[in-house]
Length: 316
Image (cartoon, rainbow, N blue to C red; front, side, top):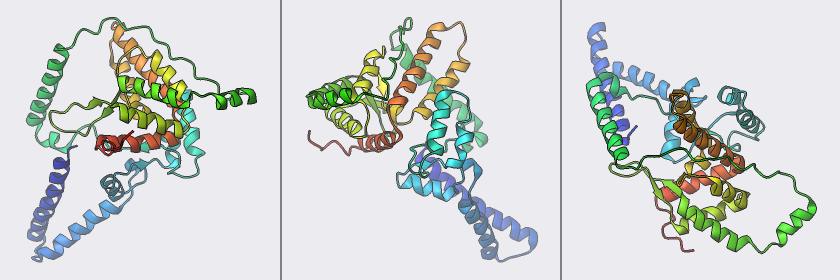
């Protein structure tokens, strides 16, 4: 939903309130429009302030104020079973992580309110059809300028390294002089492969390639958050495609949902497309195992800063 769309919906609510007040006053003989309007205002206010199950126990006002402050919606622990109810090991691990967290702010799991359609589509189906016609025409035009994808490459995510190390292995790692040069090499690799999301705007690509300074800031920050930088680079080395979107790391659940949906909808005969989708799913799951919740939270804030230019003036 665009900012202007949301603002116009607010104007619509007020217009409906005034219209309803006039109609109720005429129907009931109550000519005190201010009193009738006040009763409708009470209903609107109660709706804003009442928690809703569809919002995971938040009231609409909570969601709106959080978004205006640039904050995310933490997922309450009591909804863990509902959100991560599947039997897959990843879902069960995420559920346990959420349920065992100290509080709703500590686990790093968030949700967003994003309906499949907007209200305007119900009242202007002709306009909605024209809007999607233009959207698909742009997509077809973009795809026509791209080279054919060809057969899917071979890809198997490297197995994550074991969490337990011997004391001798730990001490040997501490003595390695690899930290600075290794991080610089990792930053160069990230700058060549990774894309950062951009704020939504007309005629702007949704992603752009990250700069070398941004990559160095990112890998140093992830290292500080306890991410195994060599293991992360090992996954990137094995990835047979060129681009890696950084929001795959910060929000794997949101990223993997459309991929799983596409897997269900893709025709079985299109084996190459199915292979590409499985590769993306497995790659994102492999990354999710390397990025702990606290690091995801840090990365979300880092991406927000990069999206809006906060790091452009920071020297490295």
